[in-house]
Amino acid sequence: MKKAAVAAAGFLLTAVLLTGCQQEKVKELIEPLIADVQTEEESETAQETEEEELSYEIDTSIPIQTGARVAVVSKSTDGEFWNLIRKGMEDAVNAVNTAYGFEKDQQITMTFEGPGNELDVETQINILDAVIAENPDVVCLSASDMDSCQAQLEAARENGIPVVMFDSNVSETDLIRAYRGSRNTYIGEMAAYRLSTAIGKMGKVAVFSAQEKTQSAKDRVDGFLDMISNYTDIEVVEVIYQDQVEDMEAAMQEVLEKNPVLDGVFCTNADVAEMYLNMDNKGSSEGNIAMVGVDATARQQEAIKDGEEIGVVSQDPYAMGYETMWTALKATAPRKLAQIQKAVLLDPIWIDETNIDSPEVSNYLYTQ
Image (cartoon, rainbow, N blue to C red; front, side, top):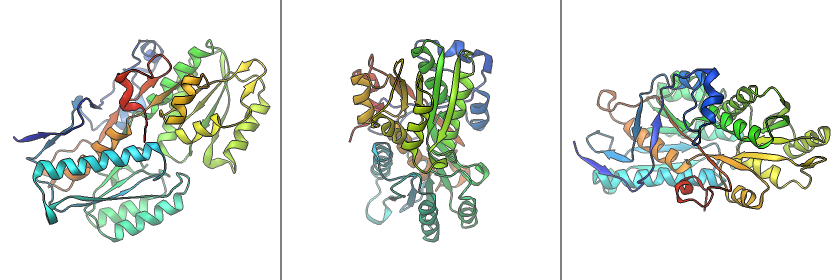
């Protein structure tokens, strides 16, 4: 079997089959690397996966379709996270064309479209409609609303177009070929553990989240609330979702005013985290509020170094994009000749002032 190694050495993806019990989560999260917490929900998500590690290798024995067209419909096209997703996808396309020796009309091509704002569900659906009408060989989709695109997914299936989800999944997973994303429930659990530790395992905290209709945000909030419930002296005073309020910044400010002695906040994605960091009034009568965010954007890296933020749970969007594209290309081969795992979940890592300058976390730091 001929295999061509691809220039993304050091990245490993873990397809997880999880078997741990809920009562063991706090104990497991206290381990120094905080790496192996397991939940029942993740077990359900990964029930069609196997326990194995995947490296960046292109298996040229798989008869992927020459000249395949892959249409990517992203949740957004704006932001450091999405730029790195796209870069990973583009590098995967280039690596496949090189490994297979595809030239001219044989070359794999991709398009990358989406709204400029993750909240713009209507625009994403319109783009998805147009993409499916063009009959690409594969669609890669990150859904802004987990329930909004069932008709489009059904149309894709009727037209023989496999769909590979990335970052944020859909409710009707029987309509998709595969999902590539992060362990989002674990992101919430890790954030809860780190925030609770920072505030002495007592006090009041709030959750400021991205869209409630987005699967990744929902999983992060659920993971956070589940984990924080283990600390009986911590009260979650409010959970605010960006798509449930007219003005997210005003809603966050209202929470701070209603709770003058707030000890901590968890922001579930980069957009909300940066919005919070850029607010003028974030103090409390008892001192500064401890903040935990998600995704190590340039702004959040600066906040960690300046002491505004205690740390972030960060994903590897480049790896996610790369693995998504390779999975999509494998989906162009006959099913019996290309085994594709239903769900592959990537582990996030914790980044704070103690390791932000370490080479070991460089893949999780978002830079342009």
